[in-house]
Image (cartoon, rainbow over all chains, first blue to last red; front, side, top):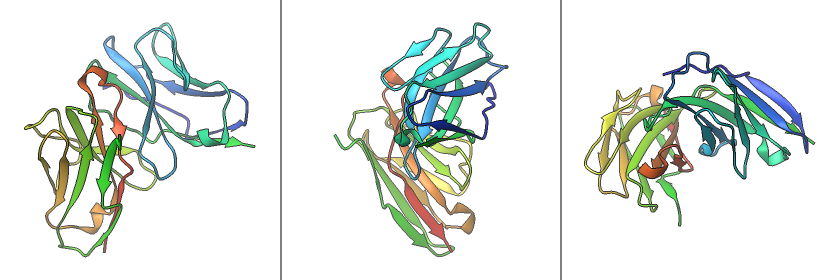
Length: 110
Length: 113
């Protein structure tokens, strides 16, 4: 499985866009990029996933570079409730065994 | 729908005691998982069950056993608890058509003294 690298922590002002980067330079052609988040003391929550095209849903947007070696999760208008640890995960096809690293702690400040 | 439920929410055990953590889902999902999360760490997969009647080891299976009782329920057993098993345990499930989206329970906080 491709290894991912994320910053340990980031800050964002409430109402501004939060851009969370992830490097996955060893990603292979059939591996997807997944994003999950974990609000303190809760179970993780799925956010979005993508293969090579940019994706958007009601929670966030996922931008994957053309060479697929990095991606960015965008929360367009961060709120205090978006404070959480965000995990970037790379996994192949329908392989459902997700490996969670340490993620990025995003703190949204008022 | 309750989603994924776990019992108990909290548990304190003495070294050597045994216990079973219960997990149930009402979403008709085929696959279920058990993870553990230690302070400051990401989640690590203990065991998973791709479908009813099958179970497989994950990353850290030692000291644990599992039972996929039926499609809804997946239990995790600690036969002889050790302090190293102090952790938060999460159960999750997925629909095979939406394999990318795992639904997680609220967790069981276990302390072994």
